[in-house]
Length: 293
Image (cartoon, one colour):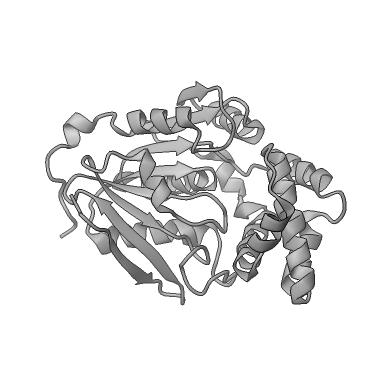
């Protein structure tokens, strides 16, 4: 097992630098962790989902997010390019096949990866699933707009792109309050002011870049088929996650574990279930896995 993580940057062909970390035990089952967002980042806390002795874990920050550079970059940043990044990293690390753990927005990237690279997959675990089909995005947008009690998401996005620094900070604070309200959470006003720095502004602008573009959902996505070796772990109190799960189940039978939880993937019950789910079929993956030649 790695006593300290390997860390680096992967250059894409179109100007992005993807920050990555490698944890766990090389030669065991490789798992790529796909964080939430868009505009989110990976964290060492995400290692709570894994038994480090059983998996070769790749954490990375998606385009424009976290420590990837340029931070908050909107150019060459869409769903398809994020999916291509996953496979570019797979080849960079020399893995023939990988497993995916996708949380929230990351669950949609995992589903998209299945459509493009089915032969490169071992298994997929989707947590607090999010599918940006039109009805779900409209409902999400309306809920957030009601919580904003003022400008809609598109107006916030315009301010974050064109407003002065003070206007951007206030718009970011308004957006954060709406997200917290949606998730039944709150934050001390002074802590919220401190949190809404320029890094947060860039992250929210990137999130809204995807939101106002309907997460680049296409007509082709309406007919997608989820890989058979997929398991969904979903909180029943997560309104948009449950809507996403119903959308998936209308298209095919899908294995799912429903928990009395919300959207927060760090809920104790969710973390415990994810750790158990990831080990399904682990007995067949004890041997060292082949690499790309």
